[in-house]
Image 1 (tube, rainbow, N blue to C red):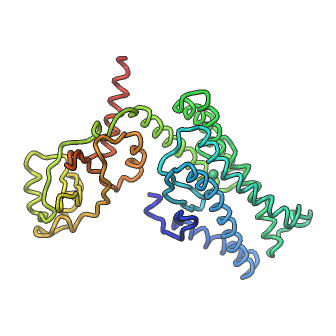
Image 2 (cartoon, rainbow, N blue to C red):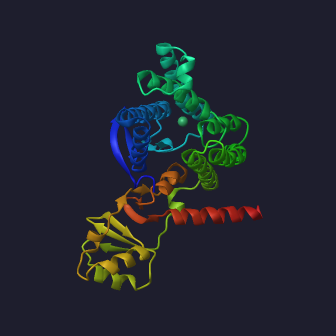
Image 3 (cartoon, rainbow, N blue to C red):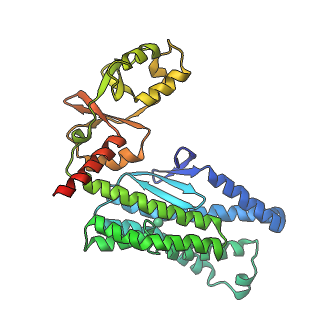
Length: 362
Ligand SMILES: [Zn+2]
């Protein structure tokens, strides 16, 4: 959802920076607000300020990413939203010290920027703090306080915010990873609710309220992810592979596919082109295609699968997070160069639930 409404901006240190389209609404709103307050100059000043602030946000996220890269963790992108930035990694390290260092690097960048601005201009005069000025000095004052506030705010122990991650990493030195996450979330949830209430009442900031709501939901999702990983530890890709499928040639027409599908009702159709998986379809996806396509249309022309091949003996733990994250992707499973089935998030979820149930009898 977040990705589908975002577009690529540029790469920095080889890391893709993406902008969510709602960010453009924020830019327009800020420029409008500045224009109302102080005319054209106010609009241009506000726009410059918001861009500078988001450059600080990008560097905060880059702080996380560059330390993560040092530990050979894959970085997917940095996504910019009106509520802030989000660095998306291929995996979250289980090593508490690594997680601690990756996390601390973000706020450290803000404190670094704060120190830099402070070294350039010193502590602002009292009149600058009392009256806002639409000039270079005003920009520096806001940058100074923004970086100080962002650095401190991120250290609040509200998981999965930086402070919450630091807390989880420290707890993970003593407890299991799942227990550490559970305790961090237990502390974070009431704080996030309090954050929403304070944002709406005292601060009157809808964006801050949305940020805390996101943090609340983000914490729950990450806990579910950690729990799933714990439950599925030790399994291989083959253990969660669904083997109920039929193979068709990639050049099959929609009409022929429908008649084949009505025999035996398999869970999936795999379209093969020269022995390689060209597409994968579920019954519900095929039904949607049938409603729009003509009988003699090639089925392959109506699909747009992104395919990631998996090997049967690979450990599930390494791939499970990305399988759940990239739900538009299709995962055929190979064993000795032969396709043996498909991995789908619903399969993995089902197996995790059964594994949890089976624990009741241990
Ligand atoms: Zn951060």
